[in-house]
Length: 94
Image (cartoon, rainbow, N blue to C red; front, side):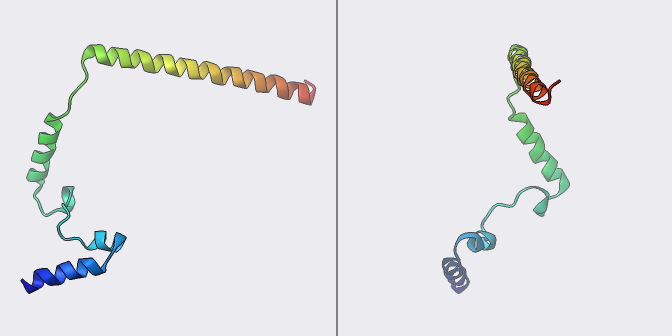
């Protein structure tokens, strides 16, 4: 019981970042823990099953959206480049 009180009092004395560094009850993540590789990969497999993969229709729609946005931004950059080329050409006298 005394040991628990000492840790609690020690945490109360520390604040902010130093308290965060010294917390013993924080969960450990990944390979840094003392779990075996098989436990780690079992956890990865469990988490992998939770992934919601997009349907083929969603994938097509998002692909088309990305291509259209990239084309629009590329065209805007092209127009800016063309404009700056004209402006600099007139300044230099070409």
